[in-house]
Length: 239
Length: 43
Image (cartoon, rainbow over all chains, first blue to last red; front, side, top):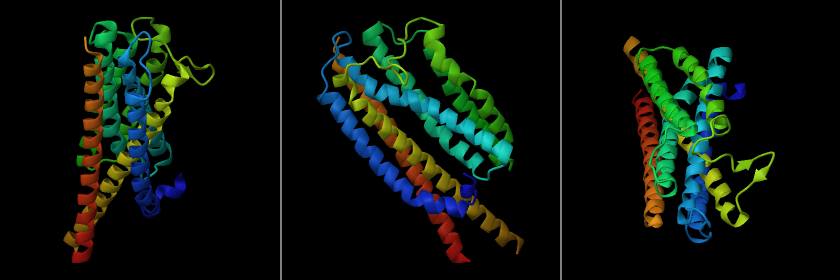
């Protein structure tokens, strides 16, 4: 990780990785979406709305994984003062916020025909809504610190403290048995979803994840280029 | 209740938002890198 503390070395890897991640992600996403919409049978209970699963689950995963990555970047910044950590946190946050919002929206669209309601103050839904607000707070705090020329330590602390919400989201379906169904897929117990319904999900999961990584890399590259430009302008003004 | 209307609304929303996210990041990157390159050439 520390090998990539040098922005030039990081960019050497990030430039080709951006295109590969974006291309692979789009291909997998299209394959998964087409498969999920046309090649899988309707669920015996949920009917056609089960197809929302192929986009809802990846958005939920990325909403949470995005904050996990922000927390990791925050530790890296606070403990090791990694020079790219603050940039990584700021670059991940907009994509994480978008996917958290999409998770809430797709869940709501699925909930109306299945549960008969757009929204319920259920443990999972509420903790996910809190995650979305945490993202907005992080984005505002990190931008304000950047504009004032700060190192982004307050945003890093906020990123670390906000990670407390991640286990709450994960275990909410076990702690509060309300409307949201329990875990359907786990590493220890496998999947309770029929294989003929499940196969497009890994495609969209990997596809969305690759797109998320590509978006974060593009934003990191933009910020590094902006910093380089600002440094050049400062040098010119000083001469 | 037409279930397909809900499915297509969800896919449409996610498709548009993902495309917007990619395009915004792409534009930010291209313009920042072009500005940095132009400043480098000017010096």
